[in-house]
Length: 163
Image (tube, rainbow, N blue to C red):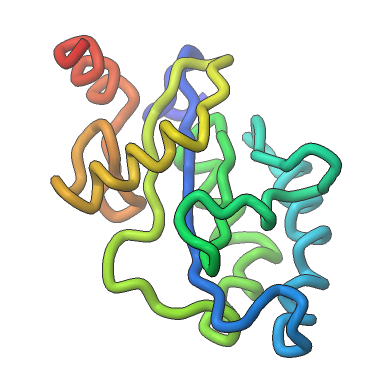
């Protein structure tokens, strides 16, 4: 276990992406073709714990809690390092490099991270609240980004103080 993630905590990540085109548009064919391989890569990555999928689907691209043209990605990892390694040190990076082909640039935060008790399965509502908190208040132990990370201990202290 890494120093930022005691065994009793895992890192939740939630991100939103505003589509340039509907998923069934020919301009999205490369992105759609990458969904299954990228999800399989995540599922097999060291430190992966859980990801959101819709009933009867291999992903969550049909869920639209942030708007009709906004898709979500939601997962839980053992540590910040394990998520970072998947995002930036695996085959996922090539997909990230192409994101502007498929998604509009967000003016506000589109990714939020927060610590959860190990074993807790966070809800989409919880994720939307954390993203809203990051957007309205900026980074804190309750909602942060890779560039403004907080440790699990800081998050636990903050959650206890606000409970």
